[in-house]
Image (cartoon, rainbow, N blue to C red; front, side, top):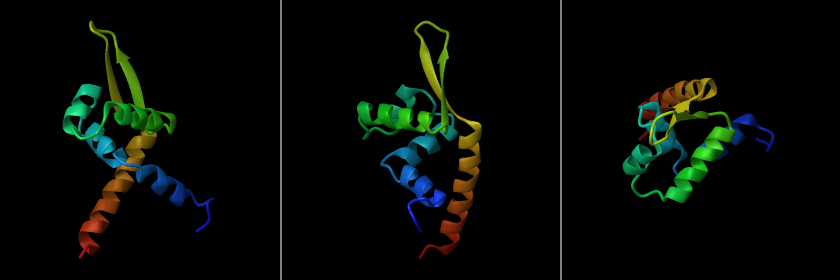
Length: 100
């Protein structure tokens, strides 16, 4: 496969440390920064912020500011992210069937 292969580009993005863990947690409604940080206790705040920003720039997640005091930020999967999660679910099924 060449560098222009879209599959390579997607796997490159997903292979970054913590990305799949972050997506899994957002999909399971652990969508506030503090909740993600508690669930992924070994990740630094800087890395979590960086990965969330990258996923937002790739239109995989949406960052929403909630008008409360104090202001809270939530992350949800975008339409693109939901589509990706379905494909990751299929990949997970395949992996369970064929791993040994």
